[in-house]
Length: 480
Image (cartoon, rainbow, N blue to C red):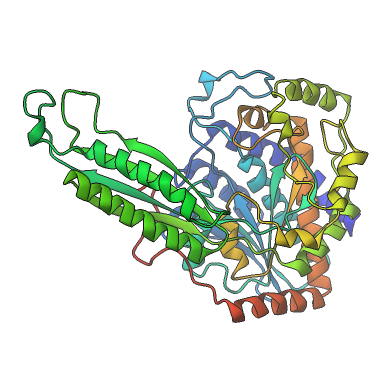
């Protein structure tokens, strides 16, 4: 089976390389991925998938389906970029590329992520078609993972409800199963409105929205001492009230992103921040309006599927890098500071990770695989992903595959620079093979599906899933 999957994916690799490069070039941000989505849809329609668009009221979200009977397997694809990360491809120094015509950049590798999931979906479809296997294959076009929680909106629209398995991956610096939960989060804009006045002649007549926002931020920073230690929240000023200091600022906006291990903890912190904002408005005699933007649940890895995917990963193997790859990787690794070189995607928490790391010390590209470690289910990752909401609805498994140089941080210029290299593309194809083979093994051995669904049902029975985005909140790209 593996040899056949390898042949199916490798035979179409030029299409996948062209696609990932194109998505990298246009680098469209959340809810604006029109051309990226259109390009992927074109390929899927050529491959005889039936495509349904505008999922969850998002015009860049879609579901492509093949087959009408048998288990339903979903491959999750992402294709959104990040703002202000424009970077010249293949460079080992920080330098922008004006020819791209955008200031955005793929600092999380979603050009690779969406393409590998596409390759896995097509290869799985090709295999079941050739061998007359009853199964239904779906590719989910999932926009706005970066700050938009596209999958959470899609989950609210019940797009994943009937799946038997959801598979995904993430570009990374290592080869491993994502066996740890992530943080839940929510995001909201706090908008203050005051009264303008001359800051020198009649300051008493003004009511400063900027003062209110700054007081809120001060209060929020004091609140950090009084929330659960695993929580974190961040803010970005969207509107500081204008460019003229001699005018009392009558308007301001600040965007807050709140994270915590559980959704209810996020909600508690959000409610307290709302009270801090109300207090700031009271102190300054201004008004505050809260615009809830988006949220996502904590990721809950399915152990049954994670173990299966780990076995498959060892069967498929790590990417095979050549001397040219290693030379580039060494030069890019040299651009990292000593502090930056401390970053690790797979933390050496237990003796298992420490042993693998010790045996491969000094390598700039990971050509080894970490075994699945169920103990990591008790170690919460510091980031968030909207795959979390999928995992509460359908048994879900993810892996990371080496597409990046060791110690490279996500959302960095180095990550963007490496996005079109052979290193990235080799890892992308290996990830596609892992996902496709994992799906086929589950299709051919339905006890995996049964056990995985029983595992999820036991969890949801104790803690029912509640979609964290209120019904009246619509997908948007401006935080309002």
